[in-house]
Structures are given as structure tokens and as C-alpha cells.
Image (cartoon, rainbow, N blue to C red; front, side, top):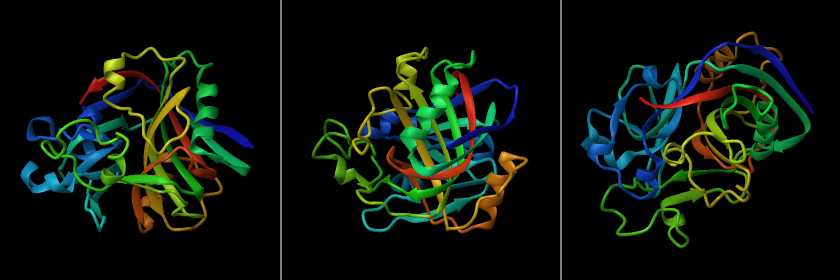
Length: 290
């Protein structure tokens, strides 16, 4: 297995937070907790979103959302059909929950392994490396360009608006599968992906719980969350080669997204297996409201 640092930058890395995942999993989305944003504001980001002129127009469409500084998209929520919608960097979208990683990262790595590594295993490598860095406070921003061996994901099937759930949460047993579609077998193999997400080291964390509760939740589709929590979304792209060498992570990500059909956008489950790729890591110093 290879994990090779290929570049590093000196920056202050922050999470810029809009809304809260708590309003999503409690089916409490309403006009007062939904906000207009643009990809030009959020940069690399993930969450729930939909594009339109106002809340009323988009409220039933809120779905899995992912963005980079040059490309953004979401899946329109629906019981039967999920339609990918691409939006430009200056197009307004509405979101009850968006996590922005900004526009740059501290370190850039090339990863390759003869045996595919799960997303949980990959994050374990990153977190172990992060613990030796004085900037690490427990929260790691990660964007990846990678080859998928087997992809497991989830998506929201119905927009969880205020009034659609009388009590409890979407993730409660017996209720979860009504609201979420969860892959129990790999839905993509040998495809490529561009991801945006965060990993939380539960044993080395110094961020306040009330902030973290706005970002993370215990996803029933994940098996082991005893030492870390992950929240990642991605664009799925057709099979093909990754660059043999990159001089700019951003240019490589932008090139893949600009020159390939986007097949899907999903929340990544921890058992997704990765063969190889390039990863950008940011050691988060602050969580601030956008």
C-alpha cells in the first residue's frame, strides 16, 4: 500500500456551516431554517439542497447535494425517480444543511493499494497520520478523486419537511427505510468518484458537541462508529483512468467533473471500497456559521 504526500499548503482550515443535520433527521425543515447559497460561496461542500427561486418552489425537492468550486449538483428527492440536476457556480440553491470545507486544503496525497480499502479504513489511515500534526484538533476535511472497487451509498427519498413526521427521527428503527434508500449490495464498480466530506476522531476531539451535532449523526447503514464518525458525499463518474500524476489536485478534480458525465450523487457509506486515488486533507481549526 502507498500513501505518498505530493504537496502541502500553509492555510487556516475552517468548516463553514449552514443550518443543521438535526433539522433534516428530525423532519423539521421549514422556511425559517432554510438558506440561499451559491457554490461560489460554499466551494467544496456537501449537504441537502435544491435549486430554485425560493423555498416554496424547492421544498419538495431537497436531496443529496455536493459541490466543488466549479461544479455542483443534487438529486431531486422522490419516491420513484431521482433526477440529477447540475447547477452553475453562481446559481442560487436553498439548503437546510450544508457543510463547506472552503477552497483549499493543507496536504495532498496519492493513495494506491493492491487490496481495496474501505472508506472507514482509508479514514483510519488519514486520522492516524493527522494525530502527529500539531494542527489536528479532531476534525479532518477530506476531498478525494478515486477509483471505486465497490460503492455503497444512501440517499434521501422524501424531503423531510416540518409536519411530515409526528414524532421521533428519520433514523429510528422501523422508520429509516421509508425515508432513505440504502445500498445493501454494490451499485457501482470500477467507476470513479469525486468526494467531499469530514471525519471526526472521537478519541482526539476538542470541538464542542453542540457544533458537531449539527454535522454528524449515527447513520444506520454504517456498522462501526466506535472510534470515528464520517460524513461524505460524492459525484459518481463513469469508468476510466485517473491521471498518472497530478500537479494540482483542484485542476484534476475540476477536469474530471467538467469532462465526464455525472452518473449519480450519493452519501458514501463507510464500507465503500477504494482502489486508488488522490486525496486532499484539511486540519480543521474552527467551525463557523456561514
